Length: 426
Ligand SMILES: [Zn+2]
Ligand SMILES: [Zn+2]
Image (tube, rainbow, N blue to C red):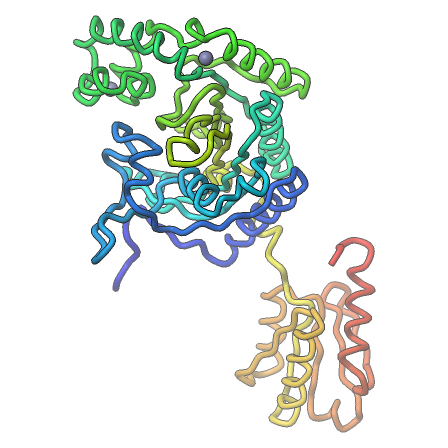
């Protein structure tokens, strides 16, 4: 039997309803905050990610699914969404109409990481990106929006971790200080970090190798090197977060593993997932639009890990599985043909109906209706048809009523709508 590839997964019915609910919640909240959906391709030129995420990052060095295309050189299964959204913003000159643009996108990303519990090589993200706004208020508002999103999904115990990576001006001084520190600590660093400390010292800060982590405790903090503008910007983010009553921790080692970040970077962390505890992360990337050939527009964005979110929400998939409103139990060929017409008419009318097309006994059909959790069963038997009526059984109260078959679909729709009215909004 052919099985799925290790590190990949199926999302099955019964489980997918929760995913749908999360998506619906994201769409409705993000759109209320002024975001519009953008859909970007799964495949992009490999160069897009090398130039945006950075050549020396783990993602580009080790984790991308890159392969040669017949005519187009190297192409890559997107490992993240930001680079593609920036590409689209530039390619379609979306900034010309209005430099301020807010996008969100939901979909799969691909990274060839070592498969482990809760980590997949095809994983899902909810992304949002804002272009053209420099104000620190938008940084805080994004974090506020994420927190609101999580609270709507019954995720609690979250904490925002924030840092500032400064601009190119302040980062130059910090890189110098960090390089001095790293060459002194070189003995304790892993092989990758020895190389990185020369080419891209910032990368060493978020290395996951324990000995590197330990060595970095003493590392200089970027926050001590911020220029006055970056300090003011970061202070304003903190003030706004306080205004929103969002608890936050200043985490000077937070550099987020991608080269394009500037100024505010953040992660939303939870204690409930052990070591891999970030459920969302993001930050500013004020220079990326320009780097990729666009206008000089600031930008900020975030990604929420969909798979982890599903693990930590208190909501259960079962709550979102829609049960049949009505089960049609038809007995005999003639009944079946009439019931089949009704079955289709119910579907058109927005009533979720089920019909056992295999023509089994009444007893086994009732059993199936019960198993499916149908609200009503409509018994369509030979005797009933001769008498010109059918039996409607309320599966909760077990009450049975004979209903004349003229306009039956309409009558039942009324009963079901009436039943639903008041406690479920359809
Ligand atoms: Zn600066
Ligand atoms: Zn290392």
